[in-house]
Length: 515
Image (cartoon, rainbow, N blue to C red; front, top):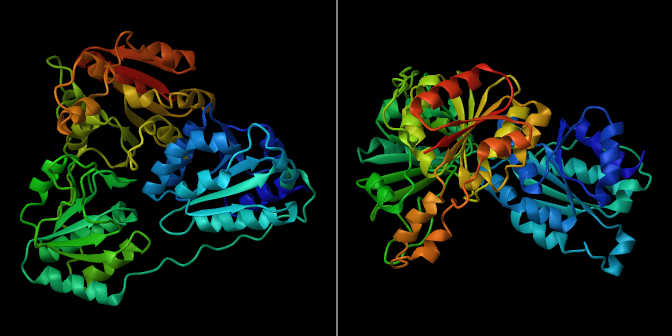
């Protein structure tokens, strides 16, 4: 057994069974090991940014890491934007990065680079293997690092000779560290705050937004009437009928100020105090109201669900939560205007039960969230790190993790062009995904931001840099060229029919919604 085979067997023994990859020469022994070691599914992506976006979607839904196989520093660089997003999401992910053989590095071959320098900023854990006999144990430690609560990025560099040299065999799995819990003093302090009659907000992020955590939050609200809120961009939330309603923080800073107005106490669960996404001339970036007292119930690294349940017990909260969403689908819009708001209403009317939604539709996505509040339960995944090009591959990874669930991808046309290569993987793997492209022919969010940052009165040259027309992108042809069936909707009735048909048919389909 060579080093690569020992690594793959260690991954399998540790419960890691999925590899997303775009490999090169230095990874060929790892590719061959995927063929020899049973239990790992290898999935090809045509661009490294799509590969890590898929691993992100998989990790969010599977609750365990996939591993990526990337080609040296340039491959890692191509992958880094979506590793950044995954890191912000708290997604478990292992990146295996091939490198030149240890004895070849001295020649400074064209692909040589500072892999450690590229990897560390986007990784919680980094290591470079020294020899083949160490590789399996390094792989077991990478799994444990990735599985550290709530999920971490572990990056392991594997020099080519460490993969092809003989090794002593696989390593035993390594258990991740126990998840720290909130200090009992923090729970007691939170209970006291919630009993003092002041206007209090519970701001949440992370695994607490799954149903067990939101149910505990709803019980706390039943005892104290606390306001339940989540961050603007969250990795995953279970929402819809039967779930406790959690308000979402607005995106724009001035809207956040209004949203937070009057809040006297802020209790943080797995998140940080609210700040504006960017700095703006003459406007505040720190948005917690003046005089508001802040308490950290749990950090992102502590078990927020346990803390909320303990807090509910401390308050003798009712068994049943309040603010439970009832099934209330909006009416299906017919005729009339065709825009992001009417598409959102159609999604609310037609979304299949138990779907997974990958939302990277930017300005259009904001219009889809409220109309889908009362749909049958779904998991909703958001862009977490702000680096666009996540939505389409995120949907692909989620579909690999949940093959029995329909995945709906909401993507802007600008963001979609970053990683549209994932459409090819959807076709190859026959993934059950409906992708909706909001084709407004522009980077609309950037046009909005251009005005907000006080950049003056922009002229044609500036506006052209935010425009996606001349020529228009043809998403039907782009999808067809990668093996995905596609249609174009220019009216609401066309969209309704196309989305309903796509949801009723298994396999990938793309709808270009020209709005």
